[in-house]
View 1 (cartoon, rainbow, N blue to C red):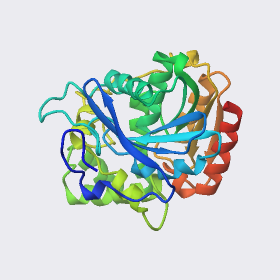
View 2: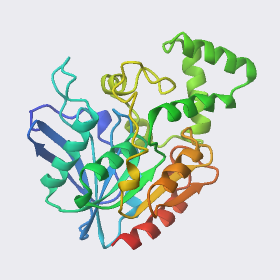
View 3: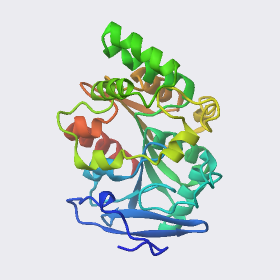
Length: 309
């Protein structure tokens, strides 16, 4: 497929999905968003990937939720994957408000009035922002492995290094303090932490490998060079909707994993803060229970969705 701007899609961003679907580009006032559409049901679920700066591909198991009543959309957020990227050096497009409002523009482009949002990690942050700004268009929320304020989540991610040995943890802390994120030793520690607290599977699915390929321009601007430190200039540094989310009044399911780098207590507090929200913590799972406990994830979330329709 050729993009609206005439560019060809890179092969590394075109993995196959086993479920029959269509794909295309939604036109926005300032660009376009690449999407995949699954099913033809009356109710619409939109998956919001993490990052900021990742792609939709790693959310492939969300399609397990497809039923006769549902249509599911997965899309690459602005500047990610196959979607429109602004010219090099033009970074004003990358803001929380920009991503929130382009989500609404996407909703309008696909021609639906209300949606249920499945937001994972940063996508869960985006889902909360959208529910607060556009409540009339939100039918339900699934907030998966996410946060309501950045500083505590960053501290939780850094605390995940406790899975390292004492000596390695000491060196890891030194490297983080020195911001030595290009050091091979830091990369090795980062990978070890991810194996325990991001995806606890022996083999990494193809969709995961592709979907976690970041646009580091976006990630660096919004969060920083590493998830363990929110940069002083990061646009998400002071992000905090904890005092606002009690206003969310749609059915909400909050998900976490026993070993999630965003510790389950954060999910517990989100669920306790949003009126009527449900909470489920997957045992022996971390940041991606939709891969680690795929059948259980399908059962839990499908049960919740049945109450939304």
